[in-house]
Image (cartoon, rainbow, N blue to C red):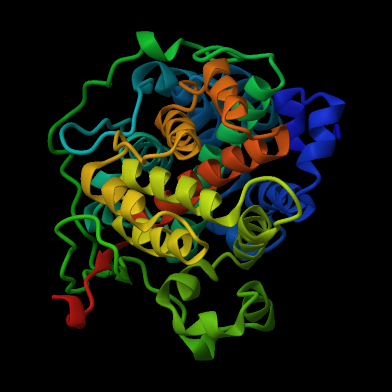
Length: 406
């Protein structure tokens, strides 16, 4: 257990550590995701995004999120790479502490150069990924980040968002954390949106893709397309490792997966984490309810694409179609007509917002509606994972309404 980063940060008691391992591929591949993103073996990816930058960005994300223990963990790792950057991160954290998710309004910027641009992007992904645009990608590109580096950076920031939520959720489930506490540097109630600039002056670069899309005007209960702002690989460019990372060979026809394949180790570990969280039905939460949690997180984060996919999957698994449509139409405060579904909705919202809004009261209500601890772990995992997925979909490209639905 001590070698698992999530259990280390959560100080997971043995009984819950055993329950987490009822989803063994999720546990093992979350750990592999950490290794792929922070200890890459590909020299090209290390050159594109140096290890010191990776640890600095993770410490920054944990710090601005209020996750003190995780911030210290990543800062300790950073010391071994570039001790001088620790103070830089600390200064940036003081300037960037906020709460989310929010869309529209001011952006926070952290100076000049590649690391500052990475902090800008990390703040955007952490608190208002819905505001991402080709200009945010261009901001990275104009400071020298390659397509490979941007994919790795997006994966890293999004992974930390997932990791912090699982850590806190497990702590609360163990009875060792309260909302706004449990290693949080600041209580969420005391945190306000950070003041920034209305227009940071970012613009798309010459190599930024700006595809023509018809954006959805609302959350929809039909399929959507998705177009990237960063160039995906062509089929002919794929190595054997990249093909293997797809898990499902047919995904090579999807631009999203051809883009994420720029960092194949991260893509493979992420995909295997996803599959175990949502498709391992040995006990715990039902499939429809896991997809409900994914849809709630996507609705709150503003990810129309992910919401469209997972609302359909919840319905396919027997979920209440009318309740799901209300969630799409009315938002995350919608009454879903079931004590159990409303408890899952409330837990997913709390985990998505900070994540430190999630507290013992959410666990108590989940238990009252009949969920055992394995099912609650499934709620935590499903909600947390879509704080990973949404950030990638929202900040690397845009949803597109297919012609048949326009």
